[in-house]
Image (cartoon, rainbow, N blue to C red; front, side):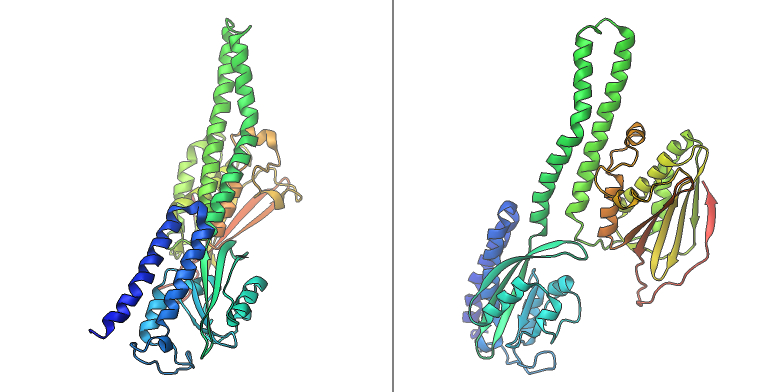
Length: 424
């Protein structure tokens, strides 16, 4: 025990400095690049201290197929696995000696003994790794565009000469970059979309203060229009804030198990009064015993509320809106079908763009903000699903959401049950 105390004392300062730098990086989000570089550099120093051949106090490692150099005894592996950032160790031929769970979450499983160029195909990062092998530490930003765009700061440094070992650490800057982009987009979108209703409300106020001051009929008419415009502005701001929140967390897959049948029925039930105004019948065509999905309950309710609301809004009066739920190839399939006028083929690819409307006048008359399908797209992306749109003019439209089913505890795919139709 006494022999290990000098070694422990030698590790206290790197640990404390790393904790301080990491805390500062969280508190000072606007300076994420700087504090990210500081945190990565301190982490490299700590990893260097823990490598077996630099630390004789640790029990010598035994070479294994996963660790042919015998560099990583259980204590070191445990430390690297617990570091709250993606970590990878490479040998002299740039093959992966070790990758912790955070790195596997970023690059995927099965990294051991593969060349880094086959698992991380970014020229700047590969060049930095090559330079680090020659003793030149590098710190470079890069972006992974799929499945959801993520931004990182990569730090590569040599931690051993004999045998040669290079460490690669990643600092996730996605939240910082998204915050900056969301702030810019929110200001631009809000200023653009709020300009028209604000101008209308301002004009009516000036009119009521002027020649229409004593005109009761005009006053009631103008006040009704002003109430409509302010309600539209309120919905627009709510949708913008909702879209910003969803985009902020789009790169973080949800982990809760959610019953999709209950989600759909909750969304449909909340829109029944709106459907009744147009005489539209709501039908849920579901199958019993559907497996759950890994998802965020509130976001999934919002997703189907937006789709069903659109189906009611653009459907045929006294018609029908059908929501079908099923299971196909390990995916839950939810299709929302209306009997409206349909969508032109040229408009379909643009439907999920912000503020895009095929029929601007009708959308505004029905309270649309132009953000509903953009919200749907980002929720589907976060849930690692897919959205398909089919439409024929004069026959209606079908919006289909594909979400991966949560596997059973034994890892098997669930069986496909038979459908049950219910009129609501």
